[in-house]
Each structure stands twice: as structure tokens, then as C-alpha cells.
Image (cartoon, helix red, strand yellow):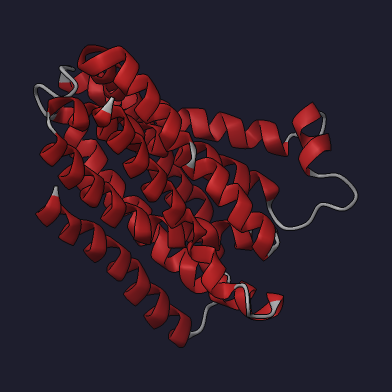
Length: 257
């Protein structure tokens, strides 16, 4: 019972990192949306860094996924294809999803928010499952894993918040949506504790490559084109530095993996 309590407390603490958007609550909406462009640049680096430094290598590690290289590669590409299909369905003008997300009062790019939340929710589920599985091994491993996930989530949540704002959500709604997505980690922990390590390994071997592919698609197909609208030299310098910073942060986090 103590293991369960500590595991759930840890994942709740990690989920609360999603409230980073509260630091902008005192700012006016226009200023927050200007800051969102900076968050978007950082998010590109964080998403690509997370995918190529953490998720994709983990997919190919023997003993983590147990997949042949071809199977692992196809799983990553499947993740990109799934996100492509979801976005197309959200944008399709004859679809039910289009009517819901593109009503008369809709603004911005709601489909961008949806696919970001989808990918982030899956990622958070995996994080929660990893935390739960680590506590099953030992409390010490559980705490260290929680700290590693926490350090991953701080830059990730800043980027996610920026994406939600850029997609047209208000600051308050973006904070609530981000919190809801982060809370999926609690479900991951609960299922991991119930199913133990065998089921956890099976789940993560499937979800990790799909999430990696989704993150690459989101960064390359949706976010980078958004940054291309500003052709100034200043934008080039600032965006390049922030993308590099996002990648660097994800790289430095390997020191605590």
C-alpha cells in the first residue's frame, strides 16, 4: 500500500507541472500570444529532441522494445501517419469533427491543439506507467525516475502551453487543457501498478514509437511552418537559438536518465 501511495503522489506532482501557464496569467492576452511564438520555437526543439534523443533510441534498445529494427522503424512511421490522419479528419470540411472544432466562433488552429494534446496525453501515459513500474522495483528507483520525468516535463509543458495558445485557446483554457492532458499520467501509473512490469513492457513497446513519430510530425509538419511566416533576420536568430535550446535541454536530461 505504501508503494501505491508514493507512486500516485509522485505522478500527481509531475502532473501539476502542467500548470506552468499560470506564470502568464497576470499578462494580457496579446502579450501572451506574442510569447507563444517563442514557446513554439522552444517546443520544436523540445519535441524533436525528445523524439530523437529519448524516444527513438529507446525504441531500438534491445530489452526495451524487443522489436526488430524494421518493426521499430515502421512503428515510428505509423505514429507519423496516425497523426497525419487525425489532423486531416479534423480539417475535413465535410466531417463531424470539422463542425465541432470549426464552428462559427472557432478561431486559430484548433486541430493543432487536438493533435498536440493527443500526443502529449500518450506521452504522459507512458511517463505515468514508467513511474508506476519503477516503484514496483524499489522506492529509490521510483523517486529517481520521478525526478527524471519531472525534469523532462518542465520544458515539455512550456512548449505545450505555447502550442495551445498559438492554436487559438485562451490562457485559462490552455492551462486547463494542459492539466487534463498531464493527468493522463495518473491513469498510466494506476494501470502499471495493477498490471505489473510485463504488461507495462508490452504497452510501452507500442506507445513509445507511436509517440515518437507523432512528435516528429507535430514539430516538422505543423510547428516549423508556423515559424516560417516571419522572414526577418531577428526571427531567424531567435527561433534558431530557441530550437537549439530545446534540443540542448533534452540532451542534457540524458544525464539524469
